[in-house]
Every structure is written in structure tokens, then in C-alpha cells.
Length: 311
Length: 299
Image 1 (cartoon, each protein chain N blue to C red):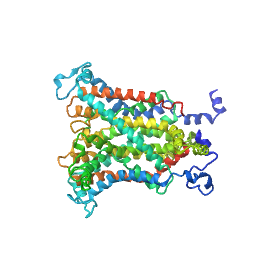
Image 2 (image 1 turned 120 degrees about the vertical axis):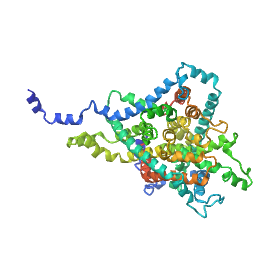
Image 3 (image 1 turned 135 degrees about the vertical axis):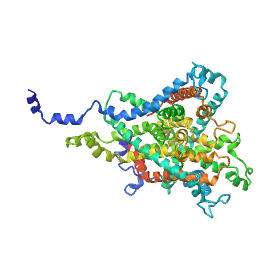
């Protein structure tokens, strides 16, 4: 019987077995390395942050360690003015950076999407700061902003401003100085993403609009912008999360100063854990930062109707 | 969907090359051309903003200490020598290369395996796994420094480059895996099946048929992994305390946080930090351009 069945359709069984060799276990084996790494070095740390947020935990003061309940959180919301300062600064930083980067990135993408002589080299040069790291950006702008031989000296030679001006150590100029440095690196990110999306707009739409006599601005408003909508929403969200979380640039450029005026929430958290060793409190701050990020992301996606009726 | 209609009647999305056959239709009417100055003026202004900082760092790296000349002449390489030997950028460079290459290899291999599973199989936890990949994008490595430090301390890996390699790989993985699985999905499954019929095992079919087609995608993912870990700063700052284990970004930070910053050394160090990144992008340029045009066609 068994023999007869096997003879009846000989080619099928070996092929099927080969095609689906160990089909049940194979996908799990393949994702196992990634899953283990992420469990061990992302999921577990996140959970331990949540756990520590309910603890008093400071390696330098072990006698006070133990369960703290919600004490850390009460301290954040009622006794810690620095938390509110850094939160407000974070919001301001993210809002200004993402807004300006989007604006300039969109304008640049529209420009280098035109046909003109020197477009290739123009694109390459405009996009080049994108690959520059946060620390290197800081290094470059420290050179530009330094009070002795920086750009202010040469401006003063031309009669603009005073000698010895240091934009990074003056509380009234440090914000703009840091914003400009981060813009330098951030604008190409938007320009690249928007340019990639611009190239997929159907030319027929513009031709039709032209036949109807629509002005170039109207074409931009009614064809280009709706087409870019989802790309813009997604890239602004990713960038906002990234700008909120990223500490490389501010840490190395201003160190959060002068007088703490450029300290973002993540920078404050890093200082609390690294310098003050107050791991429990830093964990509670981290938890609050997570919740704020998650909440803002959801609200943003809802309000912007991502992937909504326009597509 | 739009693209199909767009490409079907006009199968020539590459504008410049196909100009001769149908020039009249593509050209905008002359009165509707964007005036050249509206392109070159803003572009020029923006290029000044982009290029002055690059010029500035070159200037500081090449002119003698104490010079205030705006051209790097007489030219000197003293700053490079000093930073390479006295400030141990030679050692930092070696460490950074090691970290970058190891991260590249690990990220690509692990993401390739996982990406293949996501592209080719349906399995129970697939949706949950995809969701976890996306969510991990919101988890900032900077906020996990303390628990990560404790894990590596437990594993006796503080002050070993392995800790930084693992941390960089882990945070590169989710996006790399999603990208690679998309690349694999673009390779028709029938190609693999044809190879099985010809007697290849799944592994061989993958190596012989799929892998060569993934080359541009893998080059992009690998280069990004290398450049990111080359550029990244916080993990190395936290997990590597020994001077001879530090990486280039940490070295730059040390130069910057000195009481009186040696600007020439800082500039030279910055250029040393930039060189590999520039080389990588020069190398992958042609694949990036293919990616751009593929995007233009695909839509």
C-alpha cells in the first residue's frame, strides 16, 4: 500500500520536502539571533528602567536603596523645577529644529528637483553634511564660534559686532547658535527624503494642470504638497523623536549650558544617572520621557490623519 | 498605481537621456520656465552656509597654530602628526575601524537571517515581531545607558570593544532587518523555487540566486551600519573608560572639553574622523543613485 502510493506520484514528495525543509522551525531559527539580541539589550533594559523607577537606587548611597513606590514620580512633578525647565526646552528645541529643517529641506528639495546645469554636483554638496556625526558637527561649530579666531573675529574686522564675542557662552545667543549648528546637519535629511518622494509625482498631473492654466504655486499647493503629505508626516515624526532623544550634539557643543539653559530632558537624565548616580530617579525620569514621547506620537499621527483620505 | 499609468504610455521616466525623440512635449513653454536666478540664487546662498563650515575646519587643520590667515598658506601637517601620535588618534582610529567593521558584519548577517524569515515565511509571532521592530525605533539608546551599563558590567565587558559593538548592532538591527526583508520581497520567489527544482537546497538557492541580487541593498545597509557606529558617541563614552580603548568621537569630545581647546588639533582630529565616512559615501554613491532612480520608477 505504502509502496503503491509512493510509486503513484514519485516526484512530488521529495520536491515538497525540499521546498519546505524544516518549515516549522526554520523561521524561528532565523529570527532567533535578532530576537535574542533585542530581548537582552532593548526589552530587558526597558523593563529594568520601569522597575528601577519604583526604587530608590543609588550605588553611591546603598543604605537608602529599596522600594520607593511612587516617590520618584511625586518628586518629578512636585519638587523638581529642573524637570519642567528641561521639558520646556526640549519641546522648544524639537519644535524649532523640526519646523526649520522641514521648511529649508522642502525648499531645497524643490530647487534641486529642477533641471539645471550643475545639478549633480549641487545635490552632492547640499546633501553632504547629512553624513557628518553629531560630535564632528560640534567640533566644526566650536571652531566657527570660538571667541578668538572664530567667525566673530572676522565679522568684527568688517565692523560687525565686537571682538571676543562667544555665542556659545552667552545665554541670550546660545539657543540660536546651537539651532543653526544642528540645522546645518539636519536640513539634508529632509531634503533627501522629500526629493526621493518628489521624483515619484506623476508628470501627467502637472501637464494636465498646465493645460488648465494653473500657476506654479497652485500646482505646488494642489499636486505636490498632497503627494508629499504622508512622507512629510512620517519624516517629521521620526525626526522629532530623533531630535528629542539625540544628545550627541548638545552634549558636546554646549554641555547643556551655559547655566543649564540648553539642557534637554534626555541630557538631564544622562547627567542625573552619570554624574549624580541617582539611578532610581533617572529611571523615573526616563519612564516619564517614554510616556510623553508615546503620547505625542499617537496624538500627532491622529491629528495629521496619517495615511488618511488623501491617498 | 499612478505610476503604472504614467510609465505605460511614456516608458521613459529618465528625462535627460530620452530628450531627442520627443523634445517638444517634455519642455515647458518658455514663459513657464523657472527663471534661472530663482534656482541659482537660493542654492548659492545655501551652499555658502553648507560649505563655509567645511572650509573652516580645513583652514584650521592646515594653517599653523596662531595664524589668523583666511587661506591655509603656508600649509602645515603638524596638527595631524600631533593629534595622531600625541593625542592617540592613531589608536582611536584603529578602535573605531574595528568597531565599525564588526558592527557592519554582525548587523548584516543577523538582519539578513531575520529579514529572510520575515520576507519568505508566515509564522505565528511574525506580526508581534514586526510590531516590536517598529516600537524599538522609539526606544532611545541614550535613555537606556544605565541598565545597559549594568548588563555589560555583569558580562565583564566594560572597557571591551565588544560592549560597544553589541550595543551599536542592537540599535541598528530593527531598521536594517525591515529594509533587507523589503529587498528580499522584491526578489521573485519563483526564482528560488526554480533553483529548488534544479536540486539546490534552500541554503544554496539563497546563496546562489538571491544573495547576488541583494548586493545593492546589502551595500546600503552595511554602509549605514558602519557609518552610524563610526559616528556614534554615547555608548563608547559610557562603556569604554580606558584611554587605549576609546573611539574617534570620544577623542574629539576630549579635545573639545579641554580647558583651553587646541583648535588646530581639534580640526585635524575632525578631518581624520570624516575621512572614512567620505570614502564610504564616495564608494556607495553609484548604488545610492540607482536607489534614487529605482524609487523614481517604482513610485
